[in-house]
Length: 110
Length: 111
Image (tube, rainbow over all chains, first blue to last red; front, side, top):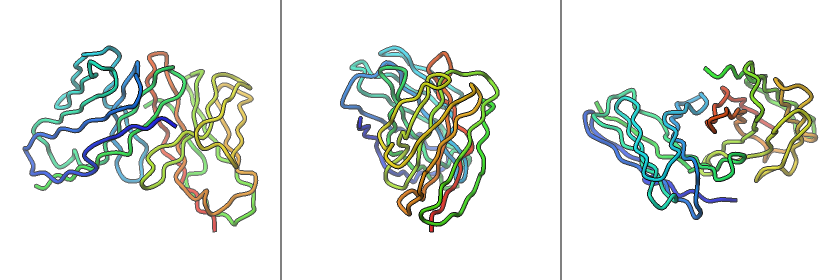
């Protein structure tokens, strides 16, 4: 299946710091999605991106659709303890099947 | 809230027994998906459906079958459960904007 490489695998940061993570694909995607998952729950959609170069924000979260269409980036500004969780990227080129990264585990130290 | 429920939420079963997981949606979306989530593997697609009675295989479909006789329900069946199918199973729907929304998950343990 399609491989999405997500990095870093884990991050330990101080409260108030900014966070950056990225996702790369071996092929072109038409849509990129970013999710957050907390223990015992399903992934929750944070941001959807549809065009190369697109920059979209959702509160303190900003995501970008890479120009090559093979990558995407998620930034979290001024992290707070409730940002803790696992962040997943996902992409699709057909709109039928979606492929997921293995996640970035974020720990925020108060 | 995308109106997705999964049942049961937890199940423990024995090797060789059949198991059926149910996904129910309230918003009439055409596409529905079943994924499994395992440590180190992320979310992997088992099967998906693009309409009533229309289904297709995903990356890890061996040992699983699905059925969709109504728009709102998508069933995942393990005909003869094995320990390798111990996992957390998520159902998802896709809306017209190609956004996927997930249900709360079913934690399945096969002893």
